[in-house]
Image 1 (cartoon, helix red, strand yellow):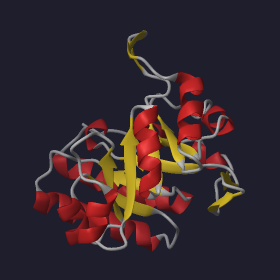
Image 2: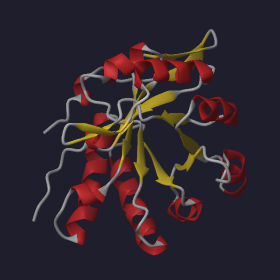
Image 3: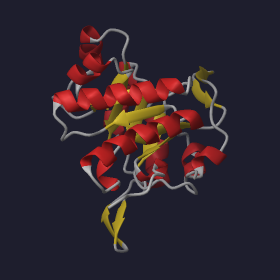
Length: 227
């Protein structure tokens, strides 16, 4: 079973051309959430590993392990399993850990995901401890994007673009494609990925206004829940 994004042409390279970002199509950034799988704790963890293997085989560029409630030891073990699964595919997929620099270093992850909020860790602090690591940053305003663009990060996740709808009611408003375009311009050529309410149908629209790709949780999920 495929989620549809794999049917779109995906990038084999990403670089800057004439000061502007250039991709053959789009970057894909998957974020984990084991609560979506249901079933036992073991099944949920196994599902994350299986999904990592599938995503790597399909050429997803980044996987962010966002299991914030796990204790350090359990999270480290999970990241190691996901790294092993990804590397079996011998592709370009990189595994990043949300916030936990200690876990990323202990597991040998490819990088760390941070937020652009004041008082949080900064990329230079991360790289001082874990040399050569990749860093992605989530931003929720154009000002945060402009700041993050000077940090030399591998990806800036910006959103919510389309907002969150529950029972037909928008509970978290999105910035829309106009807001995404403004963020991409503020990034000065840095890779901005659209986050929040992005669907298969709307992904090309995000790229059309300047996004280097798309990020999400459900957007990349395939494995079904078990009771």
